[in-house]
Amino acid sequence: MPLKIIRENIVRLPVDAIVNAANPALRAGGGVCGAIFDAAGRDALQRACDALAPCPTGHAVLTPGFDLPARHVIHAVGPVWQGGGHGEEALLRGCYRSALALAEAHGLQSVAFPLISSGIYGYPKAEALSVAVSEISAFLMHSDLLAYIVVFDRSAFQLSRKLFDSVASYIDDRYADVHADAERARRAAFCASQQPAPPGASPALENVLSRVGETFSERLLRLIDERGETDAAVYKRANIDRKHFSKIRSHRDYRPTKPTALAFAVALGLTLEETKELLACAGFALSRASRFDLAVAYFIEAGERDIFTINEALFAFDLPQLGG
Image (cartoon, rainbow, N blue to C red):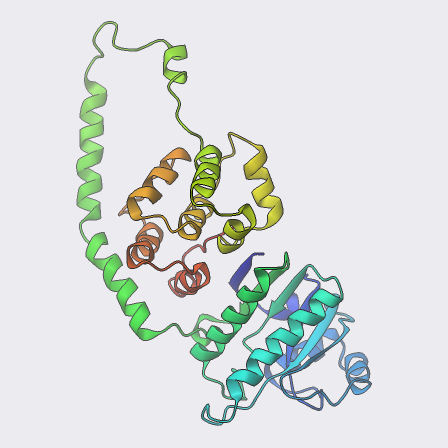
């Protein structure tokens, strides 16, 4: 864990392995495949591939990365789209499973995937993304692998139009008057600051500190126990890795980022009010002045608990993703 969707050129990533959207002959091609061969050193990578070819559709093989920042290349052979009625989804899922199994077998810690088959093989991008996310996230529920889905540019990323419009409408409906609200709050705060405090109104510092409530860590661990959950199940659903969670558990005063705190709220299935309470323990609040806050609130109110589905939408809106 975790899984991140990023916009980057895959050949530049310093990960243990990048995945090549390969053809069965494992020959240098165009698009992502050609870029990987060029960056690795076309002749050296082709010789390594020739020794392993052919590779059946739905399977993957591993070679060195040669001149790439990545140490290895996993060559996964995806299906050509023929309308969806010729087993394309099963073959594409097989690609990801085979690539992930290779990563696990070779003890790799980080892998970057393109959207396999979504280029010249014609697999619809929205469906290709859905397969990628579901297969990788299922694997990560029992693995500590760090995985990336790499999108070269935003035009290559397609979120469901219905979902995009629903989130956009929710944000617009609540974002419209926020500047007027913020201005009223600013004026009220200014007026309050001009009023002198009455004598004896300020309690002693030690009295204030003695009333500090639960910390974020204490609240989180209590919620996990109350719901009969295991730590591992929750932090994996929250897109948080084991080392990160260990810091949370061992430090009473741990201060999370807002995306981390919200990730746990989603993983625990908290209501919007419960989410606000958990955020308050970390010193945060949900704000109508934040498109990020509004987008996450939309999914919490809709009962969506799949953090990877939420992160797809956040990526589409160019917002931070949930998790560590």
